Image (cartoon, rainbow, N blue to C red; front, side, top):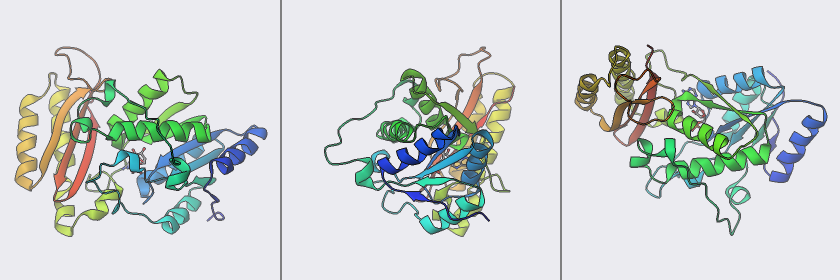
Length: 284
Ligand code: AMP
C-alpha cells in the first residue's frame, strides 16, 4: 500500500499542485467522482494512471445536479474509506472542495447543454445535465488535466461531457471505461447501498433485460417488441420504469431505421426509493 493521498480543498491549492507536476513535464489525468467509491471507480483511476503520470480524483457531491426532492442529503459519503481505497491504486491527489469553494456567494453562471442532453434522463431530471456540465467545466478548468476519465455506466452523461468539450474547445481528451459489474451483472453504483437484500436480489433483472434488447437490436431495427417485453419483465419484478429504449450511440436520438449507426440500449428504473440506471452497446 502506498502512502496517504494528499487532500486538497482550495482552488489555489489544486492549481499549485498541478503546476508543480507540469514544471516536471508530468502528464495529469482527472477522475471526477462524488465519492462513496467502489471497484468501478478504482478501475477509472487505474486507467488514469495507465494513461498519465499523475492522477487526481475529485470528490464532490454536486448540489447543482440534484433537485430539491432528490437524495443529495442522504447520498453516501465516506471520505476516510475513499482515501484508503485511492491510496491502494496510486492516486496522487484528491481534489475535494467544499460547497462554497466550488460555488462561492454570487455564483451565477450555468452551462446549458442541449443535443445529447435532451430526452432520456432530462425527461425525468431536467436540472441534471446543466448541473453536471457546469461542475465538469469547472473541474476541467480548476485542474487543467490532459485527460478526464469517465465511466460508460453514466452513458448519457459521458456523451454530454464529450459534446461540451467539443463545443467549447476545452483542451483535454475525454477517455471512457466500460461499466464494471457485480458477478450477477448488476452495474456497480454508490446507490446500490440503498437497496434492501430483497431489492438487491431483484436488481440484476435490469442487466438481463437490456442484454436481451441489445441482442434483439443487433439483428436490426429498433427492437420494439423486445423493449415492450423488457418493460413488462421489469414491472413484473417490481420496478417502475422511467425509460427503456434503443438510441443512436453518438447522438442519443431515436435510431434511423436501416442505418448502420452504432446503437445503445439505455434504461432508468426505480426499485422502491432507489433509481438505477444502466446501458449496453448493441454489438452488430
Ligand atoms: P459517480 O458514481 O457518480 O461518483 O461517478 C463517477 C464516475 O464513475 C463517473 O464517470 C461514472 O460513470 C463512473 N462510474 C460509476 N459507476 C461505474 C461502474 N460501475 N463502472 C464504471 N464506471 C463507473
